Image 1 (cartoon, rainbow, N blue to C red):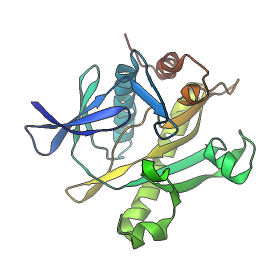
Image 2: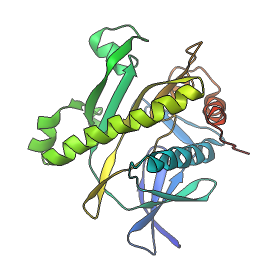
Image 3: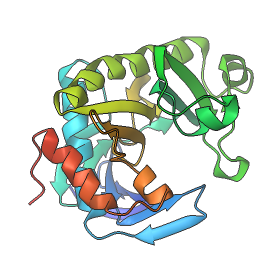
Length: 237
């Protein structure tokens, strides 16, 4: 597989075309950012850790019959993925109140949410990723009604797989965001699942083990990501 020109560069990943028009190379960089890119840093080993972490999670989801764009690891910081026509919507499930939910609704951080909540956000940094609903998605043509329902279904299916997986490692899956895209008409999970895009707390102490360590200047960001991986059985050496 020959990697060719860069197709896209996000805040922490770059995507490259290949000699196969149906396949892309996804590069996990050491960059990290928060607050719509206002806070940035370079963190050693982060790209490698997130690449391997994402591969592990995507393989777990595929084993549970949740179709994803992930195909295989290529090297320490690169993976081969299917080319998707991305839907510009983020799907968020929250099991425990944290982050923007607390700010918007004035609820206390750490409140268990039964049932878990579901929210849509428009993926647009310039607008601050505003919260949207099903009607917006359909009215503006971002996705059809059947695709909207399928995104909800798959996002909750991911919760059913990953919540117990993290719990077995003495961690709480607080919340997470997912992105989807179309591959030959089929809706697939795209982007990534890493501690950059979810919240994970220690089950007993509720210590934060995710990107909030960067947002809140708690330190040991990559070390915490590695700890999460080791608790799941991953080896980053």
